[in-house]
Length: 465
Image 1 (cartoon, rainbow, N blue to C red):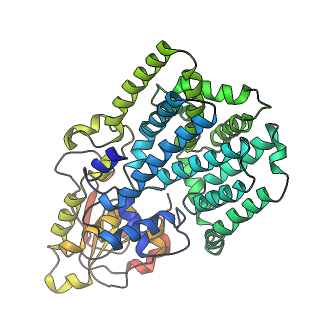
Image 2 (tube, rainbow, N blue to C red; image 1 turned 90 degrees about the vertical axis):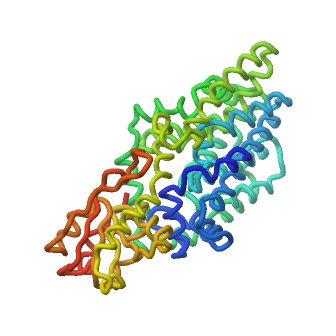
């Protein structure tokens, strides 16, 4: 947590963070590509501290990572581990690259990881004989999680199937499990109603994500990477122990749930990282197995884990100079935190080409929500006009009411050509550090006298992905 807070100001805003800020300015019970939880957090951060820095956005993600580490340690103790197992689980889960990478940014993924881990911790307690009233808290966690990201619903179904197939059906007797399910439903209902009244846009998003999924082979191959390689053996040992442990098959539902989730995400074309939160439970269980091997195996495991996780820090976090980070930026996410001030300056340069009398009616039209978010969040200080886009929820916020020149940013040439008989191309987007990201090299356009308005073709510019 301290490390994440220390590097929270490094580089700049991420494209998704800019989008979340704008989404928070347009409050609703849902959006095309997400429930309302994270946009609400972004709005609160903006109201409290403004948007001069990404740091306020990144405080809660850092706290969430710290909570995940503590929950992993607690699960290790529940599984019968001692102090060594608890510490190993906390570091192994808390410092794994995928969680640190998510925790550096305000994202749905980091809270999804944290809420999955919290739900697993509650399930572990229930399996260990805690009061059945714990189902209420588990239901509330699932309900809040569904307002963040719908993938936690897969965990709920897998956990239920795990209890049924893992020989612990007795846990479902009585009213408490069903009262917990009712709590989850009530909390998730506003977003579900929003989805229904808006034509279930997240189903379209899910299809788009599946079309761009990792593929079965990549899904399997990327699982070791999620564990920074060095945690594969402890996680595998933890899963096997959960599956085969005695004590009246106490923990078997957890192993069954993991197997069901693995097969499900593989079958539906899910992203490899969807499974990552389950590893917090497996690593905690694996830590108890390693602890019992003796001092020498423990030291060897701890040393190898520390070495692997230390290397992962440079992949997941903005520790290197900006110009050097591309070599290790395997996911491309850090690259998306670079270059936004340069983009704003370049759009401002195009704005300068518009006669002063016409600038009050100008708008910016972008190919992606990241570019639009940058203009709307960072552009007002440079007197940029508002941004519009057909991408995801930006499309649902509607076309511009202004009827003046249009500055095009990104892959919008075909759209602008349909309304502008004299479209001018005005260079390419570049950043001072030469970082390759999704914006670098995209064109800029200027349409001084559109023959039609974007509102006339708004239905045709929509793209959800």
